[in-house]
Image 1 (spheres, rainbow, N blue to C red):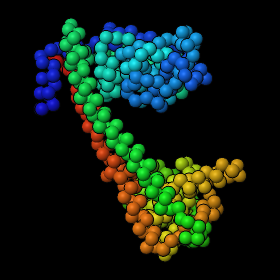
Image 2 (image 1 turned 180 degrees about the horizontal axis):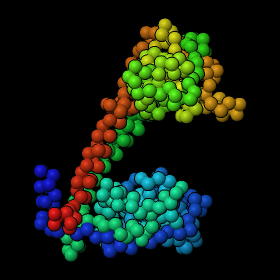
Image 3 (image 1 turned 60 degrees about the horizontal axis):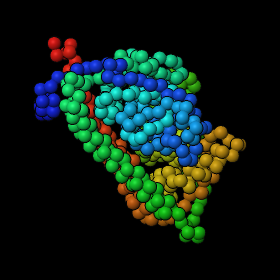
Image 4 (image 1 turned 90 degrees about the vertical axis):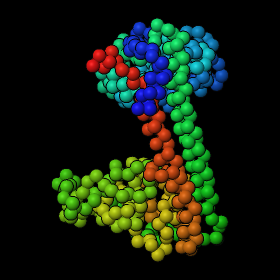
Length: 417
């Protein structure tokens, strides 16, 4: 109720009219700019692909430049134009907006600018709403490359407060933008904090795991643990079961990057199927040997693993599991895997390669002390149930809720109902 009251106070009795984009501005398509045209210094330029990879929701400076001669031939956006990437490989990204707040900038093809008299950030925020996204999907075409034409974008309506009074309308738009900016600023601060903490974690992990020569003994992993490849019963569909007595079937798809443990699975296999696979116990490790190769996980459940995994077990008396997890997650180990995969002689991270990895073996007490320190950093930087990633997720959901609330004005047919 308080949210509704706030919106009512913000509007102060004025009407909101839903107007098609085509009635409030003009779409102008970019032209001619290619990535090979970029130079170190010159006229600022934006390529459509950078809207996905380089920019957030708004910007006033570019990452790239073109020659003055080429710029003279290109379409140019100016301050308060809305830049839109009109092609993408997926439906979610197509028509990703960039509110341009800087001086004149050259733009490429496969994007367009929208020239208007509204608050550009207001329009950019609106394009992110569920309302716009649902409307956009009606007009997406193309198979491999997804696109939306300017003629179809022109049909989508946007809420404009009191359009008959442009000054008042811009004041209301600016207040909505101010509120949403506050949410995005908080998320940006948390994201920057997370980046800093990840760097700190990586620094301390590598420092704590970099032992002086002769300080500890380094042993091949295959000498101190049992390393085996996974196995899949064939055909797997024959052995998948919904019976609760089945054995959890652990696939790479059951994992999330940044998580330490595998706690559940989407499918189970029959007992017969598990006998044709590789069954592991809680505390054992799996390492992906092809997709995202080298990423380690600790099992929190008993389960069967398919042949996309390698298994590490039987190391309890020599290695602390958390210490081993942080070591396997380190840059030095990632670089070692990469050197083997890129050698040209192998195409995946097989068990024989994993066995050759040299592992430092300090005392169990020292391993536990190191692991305790790194566990705290890991929770802060990677946990999806606590720590900064969880906080960022909650703030993002809060922002999305208020964004859609502030920009979901009743349409005429809804008001009549």
